[in-house]
Length: 268
Length: 268
Image (cartoon, rainbow over all chains, first blue to last red; front, side):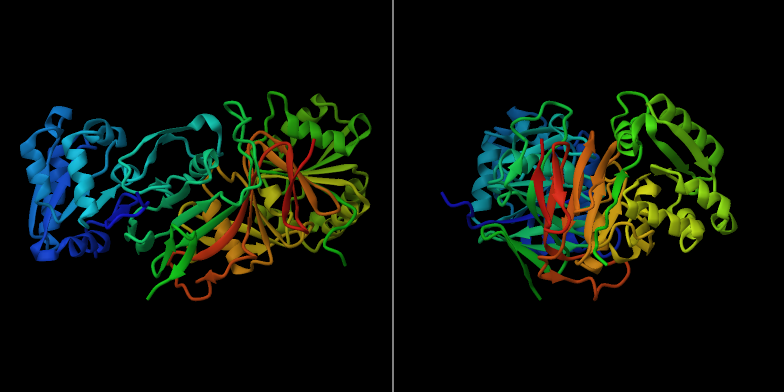
């Protein structure tokens, strides 16, 4: 299986603009088919599914979406219901809200709904997620970790939904000072690229492995594949990381990145 | 003039341990001559010179320093007094406290005291500084700038004391999420290396341009000399930075960096 299938992902660093230009959410609707779209909002991450679901339903309607449905999956039983799977299969765009990434993977991972989601993605339906909904996109996801100095004990990871391979995503990136935990994550296996997405900023990932920045702030890529010296296998809890050199790419709108070739590119 | 003279600097990222092992402050005393040392504490940065001066005087005494004197320079007149210059000239180690970096440069820059400080440094006397006292070490220093996304309008810089050339220092680095403002600083002239020092962490810079990490957390070096694409000359206030690729080095104790060759090294 190739790392990249015929799908598109819109991965949002949280706190996307919902009152002004709404650039990112508009882009999602456009990719989903605009007036012709059938958008499914998945609220599994949040403990306030009704409130958050309603908010996005109103927003997507206002911003020119077609049919908007909210699927609130409360447990794994719900995610294995044929009826909910049939609802999801109608989607031309799927949107994961924020909340807790383990709620998403714990409830959906390995269920009929989870399988249907992968099938939609492989068919080219755009899958979007913000905050916790962004983290779950990758094979392995960051679940927790403190801001500040990169240290062994501050990072926790878990298996994600696996829509995006060989990448680990972090969100609310610059706003919450998360470069340290992303470096810690990639140090553990430099095969994986680290992608830190700021608030009100997103990456639109194409099936060929290229992404484009959409939104206001920056996307930071950290690539530890050139690293010569690292202490990751030796340090004990509380000890600080060594990782040198690391390649870093700071990108904002007008720029993108090729996840396969690991180089940045400009686009009009 | 060479970029590196026969001096030593101990540049501390702020909040150095003053209650436990006091590793960094002990190293300072050792470099200054231990029991034989004459240590001058310069409190120019702080608005509480008596309190801060007394604190370091007690600490340095407790940690095995020799003669400890506090020089409180209240204005440029004071910094031009022959008597204060004579006091400084006795030092085998000089320590700049934290506070506001512009108080240091505004009061000392271009005065007799400032000149005497450079002479001491060139003679090999160790010059240490923490927090604001760290920032002033370089040619150009960071004076202000928000945490978060690197943006043009959040960074202010000013001329520093110029003891360390071709480098810009930032302090409280990981703790205050300052990678964005350091990237913005080096993007403006990639000739300059960015060195971000975490709290309770320091670099001991030798006259050959090599530094060694002393302390608990990390030192982050950002090197934009390989950068191919940057928007720094085009962006307007509020717009986010593009800088790709950037070389980054995350270092902790046991590691160091060669500021001339721009490579990291291990040391025993």
